[in-house]
Picture 1 (cartoon, one colour):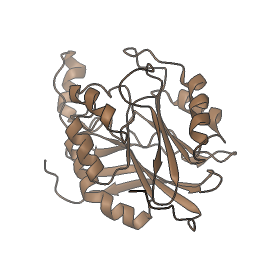
Picture 2 (cartoon, rainbow, N blue to C red):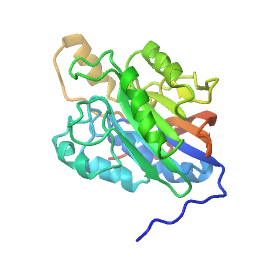
Picture 3 (cartoon, rainbow, N blue to C red):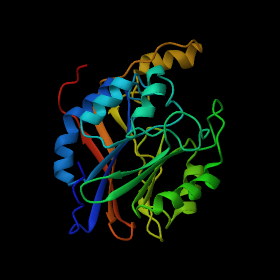
Length: 278
């Protein structure tokens, strides 16, 4: 059956980007908050970084499927995309999950996709920064990303980039490098919502980090006691999602449908008042 035609009378597209989902508490926040948030914001398309959805380290098949059912249209990731073995096989069958585009070309999965929403075609790209990821060998994102954007732009002017990087300087550099070529570059990885959201002179919305979804009174969404113990002893221990003070963080981006230029970027912090449980 053919897909329904796009709504031609919509001139502005609203894209909701959810900060990194950390553990079961982060998934719980999405379940409880996303339906109402979509209704209140009028979001046409939802992207979430799912890098930490399964125990804070990577995302497994079941969590990916569940988040999709909860209403997330595209799940971006980072250097831990292959940490869960079942994802290596599942990602081939799941175009809604994106691994970093600057991984080796023949790696499982895909690094970019153009999705059809009810109102527009929306391109999404995930790419890793160079600093702080010694376990992966990557193509230089500053060289590769403009080439990928050219391919995506052949199908849509609305392009959202998740730049998963450690250094704020590298993120800022990428912002100006891509200003005017994409609708938004959203920083992820540090799991701390920054207050530098802005629209650059040529129409690209940026923020250094979209934050995290899960426990705020935590160490990156994880139990402080366990994480502190590892710092003190250097002995690895299984991390555990924290459940104290739950929030959904992220940004809402308003984009001109015809030009692909950002019109507004707004930070979001939505407290989850429901009692957390697994």
